[in-house]
Image (cartoon, rainbow, N blue to C red; front, top):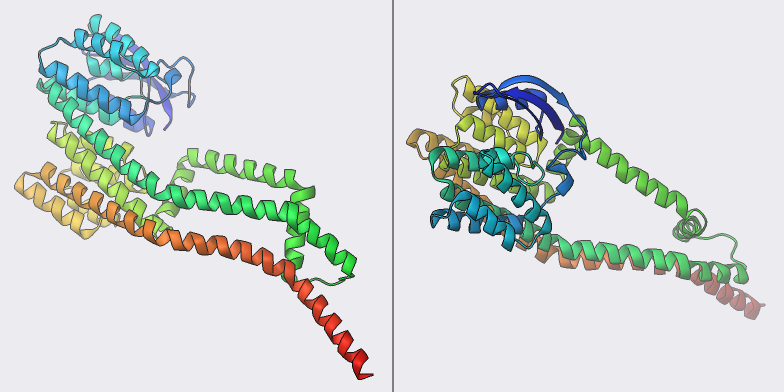
Amino acid sequence: MPVFEYTVRDATGNVRKASTEAESIDILKRRMQEGGLQVIDVKQGARVRKKNPGGGYGKVKLADLSIFCRQFSTMIDAGVSLVRALDVLGEQTQNPKLKRIIREIQTEVESGQTLSRSMQKYPRVFNNLFIGLVRAGEVGGVLEEALQRLSHFLEKDMELKRKVKAALTYPAIVVVVAILIVLGLCTFIVPKFIELFKDLGVKELPAMTQFLVDFSDFLKNKWYIGIGGSVFLWFGIKYFGTTKVGRRVIDRIKLKIPVFGKLGHKICLARFSRTLSTLLVSGVPILQAMETVAGTVGNEIISEALMNARARVREGDKINTPLEKSRMFPPMVVHMISIGEESGALDQMLSKIAEFYEGEVESQLQSLTSAIEPIMIVFLGVCVGFIVIAMFLPLVSVIQNLTGGGDDKDNK
């Protein structure tokens, strides 16, 4: 997400300069205006800026943030003052990055700054969801509840990512092993067979064998082209993914990939439902909540559908109608959201949708894990089998020629 430098005037007339991440300049301006700030100037800065107080720290693990929220909530609920709670958290936090950030936030709060404004200076650590929930807790006087919900949300998100990572670890390892085996065979074993074929006087190789010989020759003599091309392709895709068009293309491809596309779509729907439910139950206004969700859902296509729905809601429409027209949200989701709007229990309905899709993701991951193991074994067998067959085909031809030659001599 791009970083923008902005200058604003608050309600007291003070002019402040800062920087933050946002989807676009228009979204950032709208967010500032909804927060009661007068926008003086906004311009795009570098993607990672050394002078950005939040940019120099890098990201903090979700596990550390979850523990931070849980402990913070417990101390606030016990009546510990905000400054004292930050002081204790700064002492006992094990993560050095988070420790330094907590100390700086404590200093800001001691000088009269609100907690949400202080956290807003560290966009790579505290995203829009984090800031929105903390701000809602401050305004409603229920900061401890907001932090509890945030901790619960982070734990759920962390659990979902852990399950996806665990399911994809095995196939990733098998693919890497298969690639290493193929490279090893082509680099060290195939050249030995090539020398044998020359000694036996084999002049014409079968197509499979010739392909493997050419590939082995490429690995031995032109390996730098392969490495350079792979690096160029990797950075090219990474750069393409930083552009708006690139993100749209890549995210659309992700949704179209067989099996994994449906899984990724369900993960996005689970995150959308859980995030929006958490924001609404914490008292965040629906327009602000939808904007926050659009920035955290993890897919540009679904994010655009949410921002279009937000624009329609701002004009007085219900949420379910534009979501249905986007075709990114299944009928079940749309109908449950419609029922939630009519009954005034939208947050509860979204929570049920999140639980349903989290269960769907877990079930699909288990099925995928069970199916991947034999598929990967077959894949590895095909790779090695191709090399073995390609190497022994010329030997079979040589043996047949020798046998045929012997029979001809006997006949004579």
